[in-house]
Image (tube, rainbow, N blue to C red):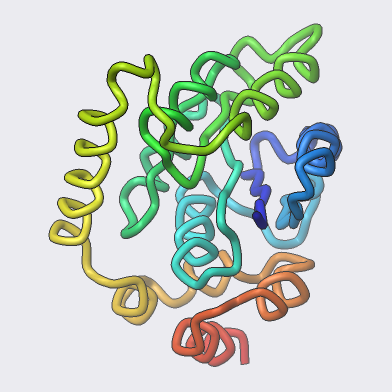
Length: 212
């Protein structure tokens, strides 16, 4: 599994700590972690939580990432932004039980964390436990176990609904404000990480044209 980490501007100062915590858990599982920043509040390329949602959608829809960890001050804005795009199913995760149940019940591909709300002493411990529970077991396994069948059925229904209610990602990239898009993909390490892992030639070509 390839996991991408995205921090928006208000919480960029926490990027290093979040990345190290996530990587520690991912390394045990044999997962790869790509850090898309922001890396500090002073980064030249600034990301809002809406841009974090757009970047999440680009990574998921292009195959450059299998899972995205993002967030904002409360996590709510990043979650809403992520879920406004096709093929992204993002949960709002506050504690380890949220992480476990989101993975087992909803089987999504992104989480939004509250990096300011309740993020005090021991925050790195809570993050560790969140990431451990998030990646524990096979996603979509169900919780409680007697609810596996209806939960899996509802997840498929939701996936089918999203296919109807969203246009495809390439259409979004072509019609969204191009300055907004370019700013979203102008991070210091975006080219290095994205183009090495992107699996969709059409999205790759369009992003290349935007950055040209």
